[in-house]
Length: 437
Image 1 (cartoon, helix red, strand yellow):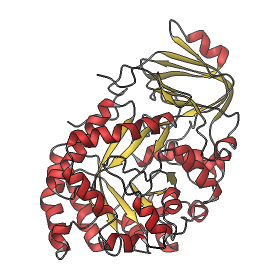
Image 2 (cartoon, helix red, strand yellow):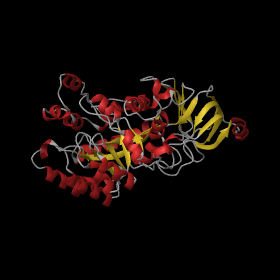
Image 3 (cartoon, rainbow, N blue to C red):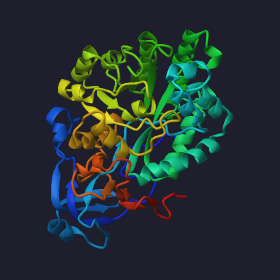
Image 4 (cartoon, rainbow, N blue to C red):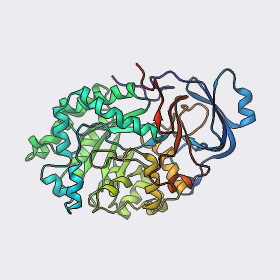
């Protein structure tokens, strides 16, 4: 059931395509490590460019006259002088779930906090009840429309976490559904095991017992079945403390699953320091991360995945201090946090939030939503930039220059979305035949 996400193309036939008449191309090329500091501003801009994709893989990038000479017998897409960039990468989502928690928006409007809603049986555990009662097929069918809308807004790669099952059967069901979705919809999905999303109700008075179950049973089983690429834990008061988080993450690493951490989302929980100490690939959220934690992330090379949509959705939380992260030397990536709590499907909207609320420059936000996000999901060798040898994942935007991307708040600027060299969306509508098999 596991998939080789680094293979040359997805489960769809790689296309042959010449994208010409590109007004401005953001290649994001020329780097071999996550961007930080001033390098976030370098988008590898080429004007009057073209891109040749053969069998789903980029083979030529450069001035149009030069690339066109190399093109033989391929379909041609005229970009109309528009802005073109790599397919967007969502570095943190919970896109696979069933049910709705729309009523919790009303609770928040009445002044209830995230913790209060959780204590009353809402939040994560409400979705856990829905997922446990659902079949694998129901999870797939409810998730497909969300993924289709993500694609239509320019996302071609996304991490998707489990974490709404919180027992062996239901977590396996979620991860199996994610694997099926990878073959169903033209988007590359990176599965992360988040069995440590919350303490399940049957272990409400025995958190250590659940940690033992995760370490001794669930993590080894998930790893043995090849169902996940990463192991994640929610380190926060009322969820998992840093010592428990360390046990869970080390068990994941011993089973071959690199670490990710939900860190410092609701309080200064020590999650950033833990992520750095265990050499996690990323620490995510970081709304309350302090100087010590950020310095540790910068020194360790652990990426910071910031999720401004979470703060947008939860009225009583601040926004992560992305400016301080960048100035500290932390590599910053972006994600939607798409979930029943923050139902945000558009990385373009997240880029706008990053600029308007995190005070990231447009170039920094684009780097964080492509190149750095690709590193955060372990696929920088195949996505995140437009370079020969990379997958032919591109987005043609209804824009001419970078500042227009965040400026158009909540607009879907994605004119054409290309996955593995095949056009999968035009003007916000998926093309016929985008679901293989």
